Image (cartoon, rainbow, N blue to C red; front, side, top):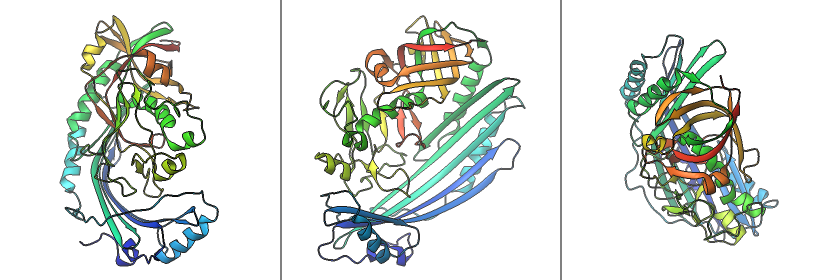
Length: 444
């Protein structure tokens, strides 16, 4: 096949010695983005990145090197030097020749698709007042990784996906409403998937209500559910297990959450940024239960952390970014959906709240799991009817108490939550209803 790399940067050009134990990886990432925001002209952007990585074991220690321009020979020498101060490791870098079954086209996406998506979004949001500021973007990403291991094996992993994001913000005096939604897909996500949701939440936000401080049942929408998954991942991944900071280190096959909860790492989801037959360390990828009906089934480990802990590798080594080395992370973090629509969950209790987003909603100590955030999007519901938006309110929850003792129901409509600086994996999550969540503030 024809490589997306120039010949000098192709990792298959690496010269290995007979007793070498290592890998050379060349990664190409190309993106096409069409973005628009209120008051500015739409813009089409093309981005291209090439990164080279070398990892090897020398005298029982790991060394690595990352560069955009150094030769493979120089990078191998740098990795050898770095191994002198590297961690001890017995990992064997293995690979088997596996050509791409269908080499990805190097053609760009149809520009018309990008233009049409943004145009349709602008038209669909015509209900917003002239004071509202809208930001919309749609992106197509294509990545190819070539991985070479001694003596001459070369693996290829190709991934491509679409992503779309939309936000609408309106400021009136000291009051503001800010709504956002994003999605991923194998093809360009239909704009209605996003704009219909924004329109519904905009209608909810037009009235404001006051509520007393206290504890309420709250439906966490998927972006907020992801805030609870960050502490869960902190207990499942290598660094805290190696440091013996995880309370779950000896909890394998024991109950750690409500039996209603099942979480998996799924590399088969169409449109997932990491979906594909292999992880980023050349291992065959498969659906892996992490928590099954509340029972801990697997930690989230790459080859190196599994080796250090003395565990069999669960084959979940992925790069958070092409400029970083693989680390333990789910392919896509999936919560198995329940049987309830959002409307059905709202009717399970006489009154409840819907938390769509919060500011600062992250734990300062993820292993402990305490989270408090200013609710930037909180709605009050009585008998299934949304009565209005609650302002100036803080929502506080412990992720592990919520997932073990306060989980009432899981919704059936899943939504993509893209990875971010604070979350290491894309997620496909439903809304979840929790009981007795603390709410405090000066409602207006």
